[in-house]
Length: 144
Image (tube, rainbow, N blue to C red; front, side, top):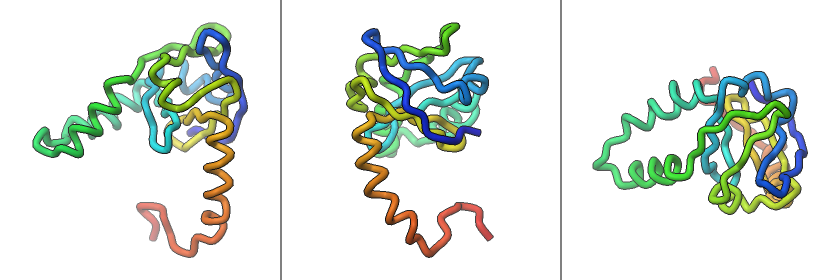
């Protein structure tokens, strides 16, 4: 399970340090993809294969929205392994998509990690925090 907020920097080679708290769960490899709201999703390889890819395999090719989603997710996805220092390289196409410069924010999102440009995360968080504080209905899919 991935939790918390971390603020690593992107180096000049497009590498980012994975926070120590997430490295163990990502040590067997990971997949970096485009995410929603212009962030990057980082999935453990096993989670990506068993859940994300398997669900998407069932998307009918006759469903245009489904085809578009699968294409955008998979076309720039990158299988990575952290180096000994815990760094991963983010391909240029993904850095560009997420607008990543030097200052980044890495958040835990339960079953994945998200990588955000620091300014984009700040704007998103500022917008969402009051909404979150005032939610009056359940949003969990399996709540009773």
